[in-house]
Image 1 (tube, rainbow, N blue to C red):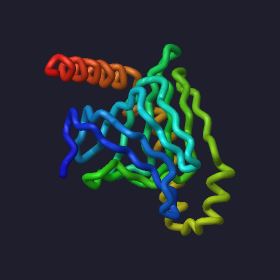
Image 2 (cartoon, helix red, strand yellow):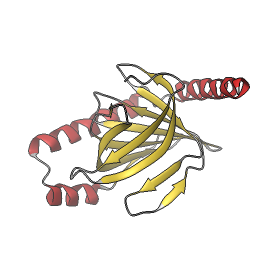
Image 3 (cartoon, rainbow, N blue to C red):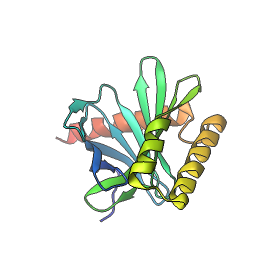
Image 4 (cartoon, one colour):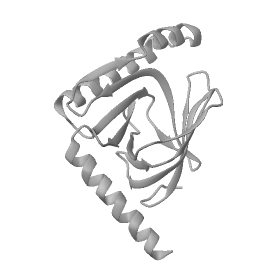
Length: 181
């Protein structure tokens, strides 16, 4: 089953050992093709592996790729667009959910483009505990290098104009959906 524009989709992130890491109850698909899935979460229920549940505070444009070792959440806030990049396995949609494996490392990017790498100790610890192979570590490091280049060059999705256009498209589609009800 293929995802298409205006579908609602469940999002699941796992850890390397197969345990569920985090879920998003609903993403609104605004683009789905062989290159990427783009979904919007807005006041969406998020469930954490430790049992905590919370609702997202702001709309976010989420990018999932079948061939990149990262995914990106672009949060639209009053202070601008904030990016949160998860270093993770390539994402796939299996008819049930968009799924990937989270590999701990994250990159936060401020609206001015300044970035910070997070959770390096967690990555090292999980690598030992879960036995990340050398090949896997290499793929993760390549994913990190690629995302850092994309951030520096402001490649998609790190270009604010693209995010604003996608957000406007989402608002228009949701408005049209509500008119039909």
